[in-house]
Amino acid sequence: QNSSDLLHSCFDRSGTEMASRALYSVMLKKRDDFEDVLEERRRSSDLRYALRCYTPTLYKGLVPCKVSMLKSIVLQSDHLQCVIKQVSSESGDSTECVAEEASLILDEMAHRMQLSTVRFFVFTLSKAFKRLFRSVCVNEEGIQRLQQAVQEHPVVLLPSHRSYMDFLMMSYLLYMFDLPLPVIAAGMDFMSMKFIGEMLRMSGAFFIRRSFGGDKLYWAVFSEYVKTMLRKGYAPIEFFLEGTRSRTCKSLTPKTGLLNIVMEPFFKGELFDVSLVPVSISYERVLEESLYARELLGVPKPKESTSGLLKARRVLSEDYGSMHVYFGHPVSVRSLAEGKIKRSQYNLLPRCIPQKPSVDTHEFLNDAAFRLVRIQEENMVLKPWVLIATLLLQNPDGMDLSSLTEQTDWLRHLALAFGAFLDWPDHEACSEVISCSLALHRRLLSVSAGQVQLSVTDGPQVETTPEEAVFQRAVVVLSCASYRNQILHVFLRPALLAVAMQSANSNRKDDIYNCFNFLRNMFSNEFILCPGDSVQDFEEACYLLMKRGVLQVLEHEIVMSASGQSTLAFLCSVLDPFLQGYQVTPYTQCANVHYCAKVWGSVFLSFFLSFFLSFNYSKTVFNIDNNRKYFLGNKSAY
Image (cartoon, rainbow, N blue to C red; front, side, top):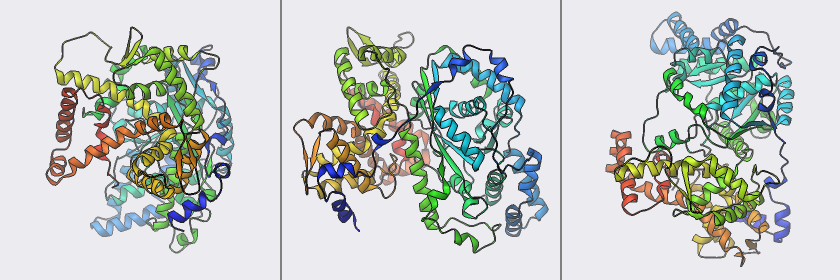
């Protein structure tokens, strides 16, 4: 069936019946309750807690294996020996020389888990977390599911990545609930941190290069190391599907390299199954909010160092609100692959011979990765501030506090109707909730004479140049935008439909769908939109807006209701910064500018941003939000 036929098959009955058979609806999903794990920590000794008896739940197929034995197994594996011979033949070096190089790579990479170091981190982090956060809330039902999963099959933990705090919190929680401590894929940047790098290694981190290029030997050592730990049930493997921290607090396009490695033992019949556990980590206030904004404006990222960490201890005096960690349902690789992967293709060659993923396997990995990140998004807990930030960005001149309260309450009900996982205090007046949020994020705004607007209010007021003033304002706007971005996945599909209805200049369903599909393809590198789900996403958007009474879906037309104008206008404004950003980006793609960008890199980027910031300042344009660094990095899907 082509897209048009599929579209008609989705809407071949009445609107009510279509809604009842919607392919996807987050409203039907039951979410677990949370418990604050810091509550107990505030009442008892941190030292006694760190030194308590740790008895983790173990995998039933665990093969006892020391770190030294693990290295030996990796180096003597048939797969690595095969690659060593290939590299030796291609390079002309002796196999002994290549084998020695492989051993050095593994020594540089491998973790050296020591419980004493873990206990030190538990003690230190208990102190830090109690100062940083009002609460750290965890869904204990998710923990119980994980306890069951680690006993049955090898487990891969897939947390979202918004902060350096993510992997520390993951290990802390697993220790707290007597779960096996994970072995964590970490970037080489951390290894160079004096003392801290080795302590991380002794807490389960293994260090890998950001890119391997065509280094066949490095890839073989790395992949065999990970697969050996899985096959032996040595420990849960933990890595970030997005590959790096999201500076925009918006989910990044997932990387599939490590995902392929952890699935391969199942594909080759070496494991019966592997459990993938998506974990969603949400922050009321992100520790690196200002740092991220500056990076997006072209300021170089500070190098990870122990001295930098010590200087950053001033954050301990700040209030970062609450943090939520949601452990999702374990996803079976066996179930995911059923009917999609022909495992017989892996029997055509000996297991030790490296094989590139087939086209079908690559498509499967890509689809699975997108769906796992989508699960992470669905389980993100949103705080009232993300709603407030969304409204303040749409009202650059500020808002009256009473109007902000009224519109935030309206937006709260809209978000809940669209399936948002919103943490809104029960039995508390809306005005009080908003006042608390404004107080927590006071560095980003000013409240004067009942008027709320984004503003640089932190620190002494000093005279600045116009460019510096715009830069400071841009930091605030981008910091605020990062919170707005946290709720984009809730409004995304209805917003695409709203813009499509505005752009189509027609009520015909086919015309609106074609515009929707064009926008969806254009933003395929910008948002998490699962491959091949265009019709399903369109149906979901129609269902959500119909449910809200915004539009009616007839046999051949989609008609806006009389009361739907304000909702559609809001949804269009949600996507407006991204549409503007994609309008600006093509101007940088002309031959000369593209050449300059290639040659001068960050110098060009800084000039580009400086020009537009100055332009925006002179025109008093507030929408700095669309001048973001990542628009230059994304490949437009025109």
